[in-house]
Structures are given as C-alpha cells and as structure tokens.
Length: 277
Image 1 (cartoon, one colour):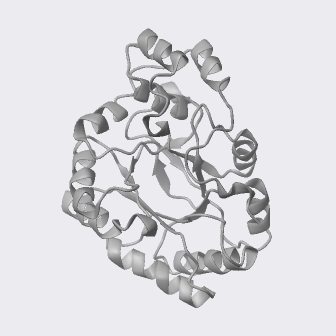
Image 2 (cartoon, helix red, strand yellow):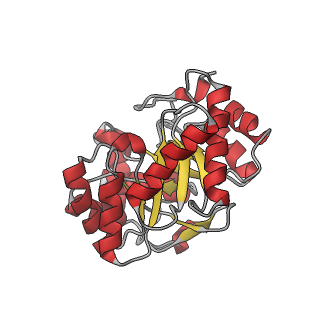
Image 3 (cartoon, rainbow, N blue to C red):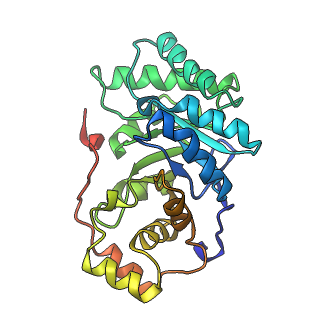
C-alpha cells in the first residue's frame, strides 16, 4: 500500500534484487554538474540514480556513488546498437567499467527504435543477458517498449524482463502497457513524472496542490507512487531534490486520484517510439 512507503522503500524485481521506489534522474545533467547532483541527492536520502550512455554522465554518477560509501542502486541504458551481440556486449561492458561500482544494478535497452528493428533489439538483449549471467549486471530490462515489443522479446528472452521504463504522468498514462507489465510482473518506472514543468499551471493540479499543502511537483510524484510506479524525478537543484523526495507524509485521496487519472490525453513530451517496428 502506497501510504506505507518511505524514501527507503523498494520493490523486488523479477531478477531478485530490490529497486528503490524513488530515484534521481540525471537526463541532460551536464557531466560537470552530475557529480554534485548525485552527491546532494544521496545526502537527502535518495537511494537510486538513473543514468544512460546517451546522457554522457555515467562516470560522474558512479564516482559520486563510490565517494558516498553507500549502497546506491544505479541504472544505465544502451541507446544505439553497435551491431552484433559481441559488439553490444562490449559497448555495455564499457558502461559498467565507467560507472565502476561493481555490478550495475539494472541495465536497460533505452529504446526499441533501431535501424534493423527486431534484429537489433535481439542482439542488444542477448548482450545484456550475457552481462547478467556473468554477474556484471544484476537485472536487465527495457525502456519505451510497447506491448508488441514486450511480446516479441518474450519469445527469446531466457532471463526475466525486470523493468519497462516509460513516460508516465497524468496526461500520458499508457494504461495498456502498464496493465500488460503488471500482468507479467514487470516493474514499471515513470520518467518525465514532472512533465518538465509544463503543467505547473494546470487548474486541476493547482487545486490539488492547494488542498494538500504541497507543490504541484510533489503531487505528481505522489501520483506516480500511488499508481505503483518507480518514479524518477530529475533536478540538479538540491532544494528541489528535497521537495521532490518530501512526498511520504501525505496521500492523495481517492477523489484526487480519480481527477488526475481522468486527465489522460496521450500527451507525451519525450520521443515516443512505442509504435515503431
């Protein structure tokens, strides 16, 4: 039940390791800022960091985690296929070495959109499986996968799909994908949970913020938590990081959740490759 969650709460992944329900996203955090951002988040109690090859800040995220001396869950992702399984394995192993915290907790395929479609997706997944079987990563999964991509993956995956990370907020709820993942035991992660601030003035959101005495951003983080998602709010500002994590002392009412759930319009703000071939 979401009301019993706190910043240290976790869900158990199909691979068997535990993933924190609230993590820091570092999308587009400059390399020279990432180290400081991760440091401040850890000091505030965050126990997870979400990076990627595409973000070009894996090394900085890893160094901040090492310096903290804490057991921090870290995720990375591979965006572009390097070709065959061996080449993709080498590309992902490079990330593991850059992060340099031992085994990476979670490694994802960043997007299903590849020049060679299903062929590339399979080559990348099999590379991740090799890393997992070697103990270099603890769990593997996907991002931006639609139901058809998940079904395709299930045909050849020999290890569980632990996570599907997708854009989720009240205006883009992807209920068909969320439902399928829950049926399959795949943990759903919400990126862009704050809609990059574009809905800060939404009348419904402002009303609920006033009712709860919380900020619009805190309401959105709380909505994700009460929907059962792992949530990845991004900020390089320590004060906003603190606010984004200060969401465990209140709960949205059934009426407030119903209002937010009714805002779904399929309105995404990030590239949406879930329908690609």
